[in-house]
Image 1 (cartoon, rainbow, N blue to C red):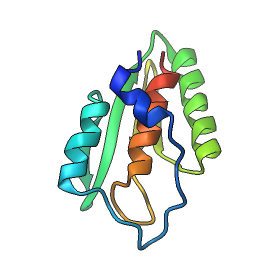
Image 2 (tube, helix red, strand yellow):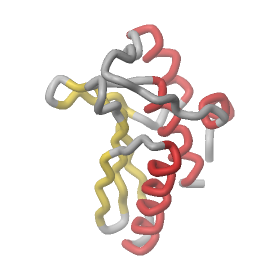
Image 3 (cartoon, rainbow, N blue to C red):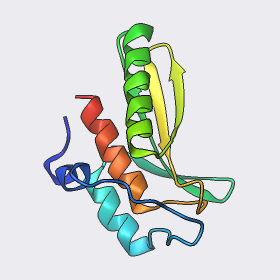
Length: 117
């Protein structure tokens, strides 16, 4: 279930993001991650990302969820890494253009949580 505080993010739309767009600051990261507490900031290859694993009873349910996340990504024109396995889907959001986290990633993470309800 989507946390009440994440509704603030779900109601927003992603903005076009270019190479010169600002990454979230450490202060913003603390505020935004509090709105989506099930997501974990990860650093891979010096790039900050948001990651969450969702669990399902079987492959078919995980696959259906991965497809929903793909449709969300297309509608927001913001694309995550999606790892589909039997009974689980790992979703990783980050902004490729800036090599790190932008507010768009938090918006999409909150919307991804809503899909899992």
